[in-house]
Length: 218
Image (tube, rainbow, N blue to C red):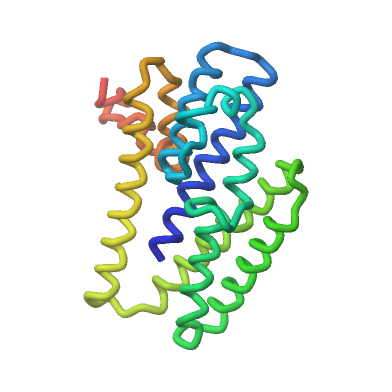
């Protein structure tokens, strides 16, 4: 279940990087380019797939990030990649397949099919991989819902939620540390969206009106 949290975080960050990369290609804005560089380095720290976008040879990979991004998505033999984490998730899920519902098993099998799609997809078809990642994160949400519905609200359920929050916190800390040590100034909104669910970000940014309609935070 904690591998699932890592997979979700990697997909959200890669999706955000994909959006920033498209903005750079279209607008070539210096702030967006700086933000993209910082997010790419954050991706390496988040996945711990060094050297990646840090260390020796990083300048060339930062100038042409697509091959490294694709490898982080599809290479199952490289520890820390999306494919490797999905493979670990499936291995753990199959070990306890007799303890989960038939609906959950069907979703797990679908994730296995999507992983095969990642491995068999075109190495240059980023949009295809993006569609696969979208379906994977939807399936992971279904697994989360199935697990929540099938567990009794006892200590096991509480510790499961606690572990997921600790894992998410550690991943967020890795991303924030990678961003804050940079000397450049990134687009803070892009960094926030990279580390959090956009719905939560929009909710937290929404005004808190008082009785007269004014924002209480101003």
